[in-house]
Amino acid sequence: LCEMIKEKCDVPDLPLSDFTGEVIRAYEVYLKTEKDLCQNTLIRYMKALKKITNRCIANDWIHKDPFAGIKVRTVQTNPTFLTLDELHIIYRRHFDGVLDVVRDMFVMAAFTGLAFIDISNLKREHVVEDNDGNMWIRKPRQKTDIVQNIPLLDIPKAILKKYEDNQKAAEKGTLLPVPCNQVMNRYLKEIGNICEIDKVLTTHVARHTYATVCLSQGVRIENVSKMLGHTSIKMTQHYARVLDSSIMEDMQNIREVMAGDLFSKKKRERKIKQ
Image 1 (cartoon, rainbow, N blue to C red):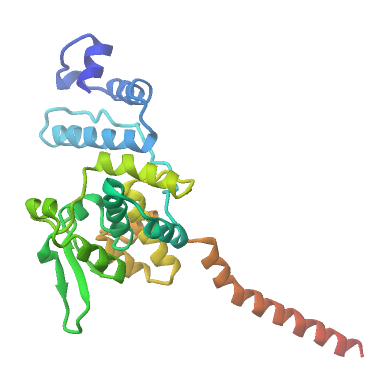
Image 2: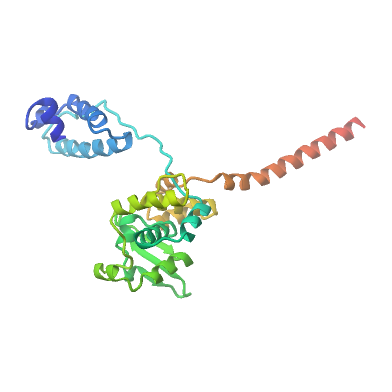
């Protein structure tokens, strides 16, 4: 916003009295053209600015809402996710060095649904055992502070076992030696190419994958939402994408019922004709 004011208004700053709808519209255009932001990222900046103008209105620093008549809408996106087959291809592939570590961190996230920051900050106290001997990850999500309850499957257990004596993780006080996000995303692209997966892999693809696979395998959306640490079911629906295979499974029963009804109808018609 400071850059835009200096470039477009040719002043170092603007008083609140000059902060009008015209400035807001210029800011929106600036984000689109000069900063080349996509629509949903642009809206995050606009929402942040609107919080400030709302505070100004609440304190009577300005008397007219500069956002009046201005509406910015998000666009529906289709997040990238992996199928179980693709995930197993990555897990079973042999890698060395940093690629091996990056692959393990990605698979860990894909089998737990943890976001990158939560994988990075996973500590020993977050892994607990219940009365039946089942292992769980119980950790407040960094973004929302909502506790995630995630049952540990065999593959995540094996990954935790693999790195239990890792020196880098021990120095950080965490369970896993997670590289920075930029390094993860850079090497994930290389892993995708090696495994011949025609999708752009990022750390967040793992979280999309967990939600989608869970729902496609019949896990209730309420449980998926709890494991992901979401504040509402709507957020979970945004992440989850039902696979075609599960649609066909659900429709198979309908196909048989409809075919049976059609057969019965034809049989009744033949009897009437006789």
